[in-house]
Image (cartoon, rainbow, N blue to C red; front, side, top):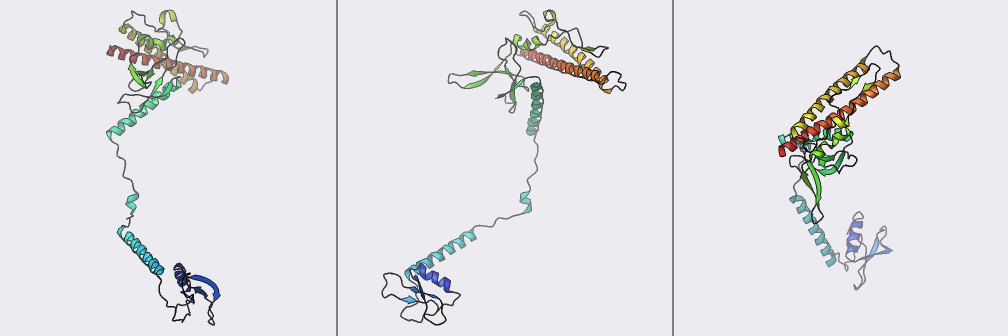
Length: 311
């Protein structure tokens, strides 16, 4: 005999074994448990109350289905217990959340410094109108350094791709299968000097301030002072011309810097404010142009030296 507290569990066990829950209440006074009917195809049909049944003709035995269900539950419980027992608990400690300190090696330091230099140089060239390309330098010593290309002048062929670190020039070629690859090339003398054709840099006139606040920049003389080597010009004369141009531009930059300093830090400002602003703006523009010209001359010097070494 089961108690009222055990009735739900007992009802579930019988129903799982095939017994049917009916809507008939137990006839015993004070018992409100519904009767169970024996499974179909069982003769005779028996009605059973799980709490107060005293009918000895209906033994409270487990049917084969009950035995199977019990065995399955026991087997599942045992397997779960074995699984839980065989899996060791994960040890948690505060030390497991602490990452080991990063140790900078010589290789990582070299790459970081190389990346910093490339970023500064690429940024400077972008301000001068260069284009950063999607290609990366194939040189093993250059770690993922994107190539750049200078602005194209009128009537000029497509400029070569250049690496700002190793200074090598590259062209894109296609093989028979249509695959593109970068091929290192040596710049020709005409291509080396092509950036300077638009500079018209004078080798004799420096930028000097005038008394009225105007800034006079280098005057151009394309016929006599343009840095355009002829076919019979030697590498030595070209290097000498580039060196003279660099010295003149450096002197001009120093004069402009002094002029800018005097305009900004002067305490006795007798000119109208608008005139001072215009003078500062003109001086700053001249500084920018001279700096750009000096950078291009330095690049030409380096390219000519590389071409001379490789030849």
